[in-house]
Length: 234
Image (cartoon, rainbow, N blue to C red; front, side, top):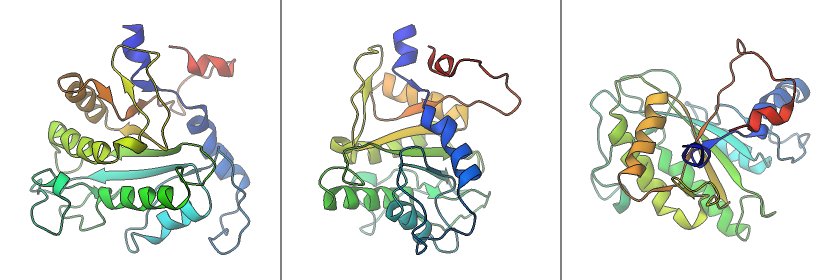
């Protein structure tokens, strides 16, 4: 049970500290053109998208050398699926996943897979990693509960994206705590616990190879550990 949990749960110190650093030390007026943000592995970009301009904020995060970004996802009311030549073959008949935070019956925003296309393109340009330094790029995917998603269907859809970029992905095998292998992209599932559990169950019943890991959330109302190392305890 310990190995099973360790191979599935990711307790990132960078995730815990990154938003504190971002909020405390980065001026709100900083923009992509200001050049005031120095690259470091602790920076996180919360809500890395702009619903009125879906591309630019995410591209800014890449250009400013963030290593940790968040994308909120949801389905539409009808749980529409990808169908037609305008969508990648690997996603045909999979449920559509929109990147959006606020509940909407018809999100009509950018699809999750397009952000992975952006990341993969930059990895190819930079010789194997997003910023050309060999460090993994963390994508936090926050599942929203609006429109009553079918979590098993969502798991199948995200897994199709992960498998398409499998050679770039960090991975680990269920039940083997020593199997984690760091890749150019590390996906962490956050948000709805139902989604995290459905993805784990989906992988358990198929390949057993995790291409995404769940986060450990520490609320502002939770007690604090006196020793930072305790946040990594299994």
